[in-house]
Image 1 (cartoon, rainbow, N blue to C red):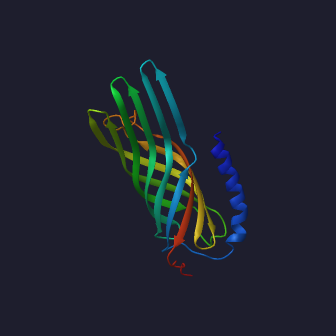
Image 2 (image 1 turned 135 degrees about the horizontal axis):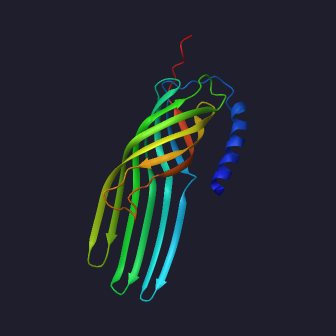
Image 3 (image 1 turned 60 degrees about the vertical axis):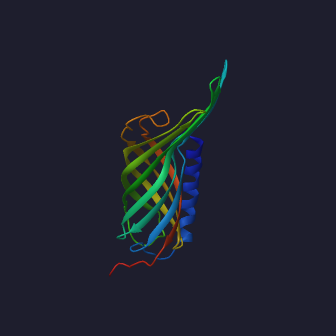
Length: 219
């Protein structure tokens, strides 16, 4: 198990224990919005230096959902609509050889829309488990620079991000969420960052600010 996953599980147990006394009041979600920032906990990072006769190459790359900014609006007490933009992977390479210096950089940016469904409703004193599904374009960009040439590549794939997780509310304005799932992408028409597909598991920790006026359910 990744060290970050162990840390996340410990955080979940602590936050679950703290959530009940911190939110022991009736609060509702329908009609409210949330702006949250998520951080990837299942990310593979790699840095490599290769030195050979007449050439030095340095590469740094990350694979996995690094993080995202998400906006959520609760249309009902259990159903919410969401929009998100994040970074799914990035890579930078610098090379020096007899021909000169070359550099390249790439980034994978998913822009998704979808829904989140809470499995329970009521006040926010208890953790709320949810199912989520997001769909949208995944933008891949890559730029290369040499002494004599500059080039840029842009390609688009389709991304699907199903997940399960839990929301922990603190008071009426703050929440913490843990979510895991699998990010599926179709293939780019040409390699971006040395790959044509960026499918893989994800696990995120999110911090959110909840705002707006709620509409309590009618008796």
